[in-house]
Length: 413
Image (cartoon, rainbow, N blue to C red; front, side, top):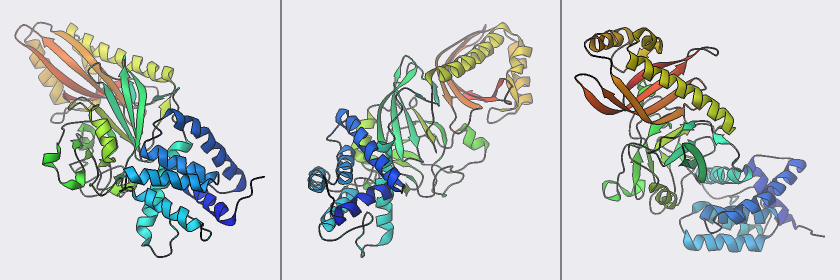
């Protein structure tokens, strides 16, 4: 019979506190969930800092205090700036002397930094209590274009960034990382609100170490906030990046940035090789959503059919059908629908019917919505007096629950 000491029982309760769950029945569920997670950990990188941390938390839940302490000490040898690991080590040492009831129960430390570390522990543990559903696909990645090798999805609610690989246009899960986001949450509206934006974005640059202060770590990747949808809704601000941490900081609390998405430097280094300037999509959501692959495929086919109808109507010169594909509230950023169509009709009337080719199509559903999609593609246009190639971006919106999809924005990407 395994009899726990009072200090061991109190230490175990801090795991329940971290998960935000109380009650005897649910505490047993947590222990079982952690045990199941051991299988996942055994197939993951067992030397990664987060895996080592979670393994020690698992051992605490099993009252294996010496093993947990040994694991934390090994973790700190390779990552001496991991503040959360230092705090857990302190708890394990303190538990030898007296019972503790929650993480960081020193009685003398400034409260806010301890609260921040508790939230980081909660976020990291939550990821390992809720494994990624590998039989499902991210709702947003309907179709990845051939040139895009990877896609990124940041979940601000769970402080997690997911990396997916493009496999014949469909996403395949590769890895995920802990992240820190805006101090005041998500849904950025204006400059200085210290919130992280929600939307479909793309990497626009790769800033090397030489162009950055230590605060941003070894590199940074700006994204195109505010995007076309943000500008349409009057959202302001700038300088939203994926970036790292200062040399003396392994990771920051879940809510700590001025709006950027922040990763540990080692994680950002691992991610950097997957990022393509001007190509990689960075989808930021306040709640990650997965769907069955056949549901994503059905919507992908529907939007692809609408796009093909747009191409055919333009190429055939059927302007009535062409105009019908555009929504009444269309804008290209400078012109509304009436002005834009007037110029379009006038320009096309002076030319023979053009040849229009589209390729390299990417289709992304907007986070938090089922009625808005971003479609990127390469357009090849030729007529009697003009030939050109360009990257184009369209926003498609479903007019109502039973209505068809319409273009509400179109311009060069």
